Length: 502
Image (tube, rainbow, N blue to C red; front, side, top):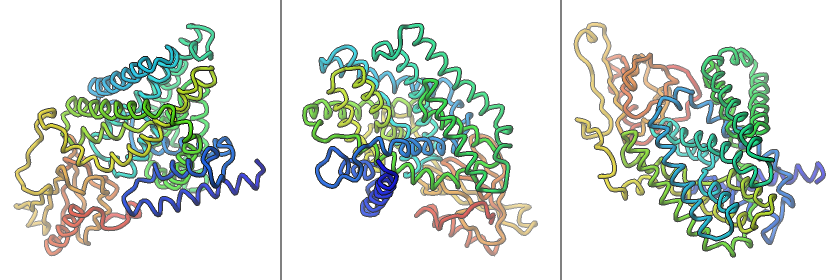
């Protein structure tokens, strides 16, 4: 494709994704399936308008979308967030993988396509999409939810498992000469990831010096370079480029520039992420799905049951309730880039072509059902029996928000004390303190979270079970309470432009 044609195709892809999202989002549709459907409708395998004759023409731009999606996710969390679960997190991820990979293996043998095909189908069905999981967490505003750490832990364990599983599959797919080369590949991948984890834990401040400048242009150029080169090295060493981008985001997320990096990454994540899902749709041939329609329907139904079951088990292990259990199971439901990569490897190895058709149809159906299911996780949670979950903590107040004003010496200081408890169900969850827009005369005090106390700032993102202490002028107390209750009832008051204080 000539340069002019490439520019027209890329511009048309952006434009179509944006226009379709503008129509669908106001009626409650997530953007992910809309971008994918746009790719299917305008791809080379669908009759009608064909704006991209060869999906490979957009492959690099789409890969950047995956890199920025996972890089942003890494910025949102720390190594401690992902490792603090310890055995509970490993247990939850182990149950998820055992159920889904085991179910996929059983499906592969039931289809009767051969042992090699069954091993590929096991991974196609068993591994969720890190990119789609990231996008869903962002779109639904659940990055601050307690169960999100479990969801991310599962996706990280999936990527580690996939590196291990792909190495074992190489002799089957013809990419390795024997078990020695397979073991070497596994060791290399884990050594690389372990090295990045050490940097995230002990060397983040040194990496932070590379982006320690007030010039935003330089910051953007440097962090983009770090994200892309780390992703490339990761893929070269047998680790997915997604997990490489996630790990470098994890490292930079521990620096003092983390909030600024998140702000600067937003437009890159959204723009290139749209092309990633559009490109995803381009690779799907609707006509090839008819021969495997029955297998696709069974695989989708099985995955829904197994993922929700895994979510229930993970919630029980961590002491969460029905809502968290449904959120876990439904967020990791959608399959994506890894399934299609595995299918392409199977085709390259000369395996049954129906494996690729199954993967394409399976991914497309779950790509539509998954985001819709996540958006409706509340009704799904109510269908789960309460007996499957540990008793939830009861609060003395009848409403999810508890506001109380302290007494005693504070009055002699001329200030009232607001104690704000973010209970389950409050829309304060996920809101930055600065977004409350507290009136003048209000001073941020302390935050109590998970038994630890820290200073409260405008950039503090509130989470369920947090207790916040705010000092306020007695004459402004009612105004402060009204603003807090307004956010509690309906969500954010306005877009917040950063750490402006209150």
